[in-house]
Structures are given as structure tokens and as C-alpha cells.
Image 1 (spheres, rainbow, N blue to C red):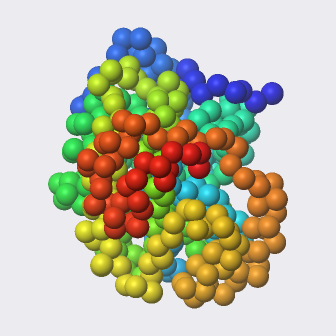
Image 2 (image 1 turned 120 degrees about the vertical axis):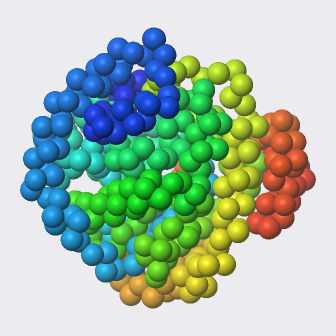
Length: 376
């Protein structure tokens, strides 16, 4: 019987390393009521370190020497914009490689220990995500920065653990390319290793990554993968900000190591949205036109298969016919959203109008409340 709650006796850092955990905790403090959760995590992590060292011994040379010869595809967009849907669809392609949920939680043992640990964790994992009722499984495609946080310490996803430090984390680490050189190099090394492991693990040839954090990393990704393809998906700013705020509040209970402060407000989410989208608009001109597709979620949903085929054609992918049967099966099994989106509140509308009106204009959305005060 699968669990239905999103609370665990250990932290998501359980699959990290003792060294990386120490680096993360160096700037953040675990509150007393979560110390036992962290102790459990240390104990489990210490046990798993034995397997991690074995995987490193067996696989490190092959991982480091693995060249990413096929240009990756990066699905980017602000959280709750439809990135998960496109990621799941594109990962139906037999040629697709991707980070699984298991890899993001256990990046150091994914290639040698999944045979016994994955079934165990699936029993402990909720059958569906609590905030939108989307199915969960250790083999499903997953967002990259959860895994990157377990490999190195530079990511804003630390705010899932330390929501009280949200401002500090975002201010210091939203722009990965502005970190000190040694941290940038460590991030690049970890990212290459993560992609290489995904290629080995899923046995695909074209890496498909989904990561809202990449909105601020365009230059960094192009340094590593000059011919990478980018899919930018967007949705009305009122809707994504409202959705993300409630998403975070529903996830924090399962991840936090300190309590969510009363000062965690919608304004913080809108601030993150504004900075992320401004960064994207400031750097998207560096992506060759042939390698960038920009789509709105509403238009994509009007003709999912047709829009996917258009993406394949734009990027010169010739295997849509091979991917189509699996895409059809996925759409049959997932005919529509499993949740009802909350309409944006007056506060959200006012904050977006105040801070992100220029972004709405660039994306072609109307700021008039009457155009969005209905369920998505």
C-alpha cells in the first residue's frame, strides 16, 4: 500500500554525501524540532556512503570520460508553467535520457543500488504528489536541481529545506554564473556527471532536462553545450505565481528543516518570478534562433501532439514516428490535469501588476483581472 502523505522521517539530503551536507548546513541552522530528522538522515547517509564509494570506484572513470555528443534539450519556464507536462511527454521518446526521481534523490548510487533500494523507496513514497495529484514513482522523470543539491551545495532549492532563509538563498545563488569560480567549476562538474549518469541509467541518447532554475543559466549551459536546444514554456503570470505559492506551502512540511516564517508571502514568489524571467529575457538572444522554441501552455494544450511534432521538426529530430505510440499511450493514461487550479487572488494580481507588468507585456498576456479570474 502506497503512502498518501508527504512527510518523511529523513531529509531529502539522505542521498547526498556527508561532505556536501556539511557544506549546506554551514550557512543554515536546523531547528530543534527537526534535529532528529537530520540525525536519521546522517545515519542513513553514512550507511549509503559505503555503496556510493563502490559506485565511484566502478563508474567514475566512465562517467568523467562520457562525452555528451548529442546536443541536450532543456525545458525551461517558471515553476507551474507546464514544464513537467512537456518533460514527461518528451521522455516517452525511446531515444530520451533523463534524470529519474531515484537519481535525483540518490545520485551517487543510482547505477549500482537501484535494484533493491528503488522498490523500497517506492513503498515509502506517496502515490501522488499532494499539491496536484500527479502520479509519483522513482522511475519517473524528475527536475534536475533536486539532484544537483545532493551533489554540490550551490542551488536555490535549499529553500525547500530552509524556508526561513529564502531571501538569503535566492539572493546568493539564483544566478549560478555569478558564483565564485571554484563553485562554478564544481557545479559544471556535477552537472556533467548527472547528465552522464542519466544517459547510462535510462539508456537514452538525447538528454532531456527540465529545470526552472535554468532560466538564469543560459550562458552557463551554452558554454557547456553550444548546440543545446531550448524549449521555453510560459503561462499567465497571475496563474503561475498563485500556483507556485500554494505548491511551496504544501511541499514545505515534507522537506523543511526549519519552520516556514510568517514573512513568507506571495511577494517573495513574485519577486523570484520577476528576477527569473528578467534573466531569461536578458540572455535568450544568445541562443541561436534554430535552437529556441517558445510556447504558451494554453496553445500547447489545444493540440498537444501537433505541437510536439512541430518541436521535433524545428530541432531536426526525425524520430517522431517512433515516439508517437508511447506519447499516445501517455496521453491516454493522463487525459488531463488531476487538480483544479486556484484562481489568482486580488493580492496576487496587484503584486504581479506592480512588479511584473513588463513581463506580462513581453509574453503577450493582458493585465486585466477579468481575463484570468477563472480556473485554468
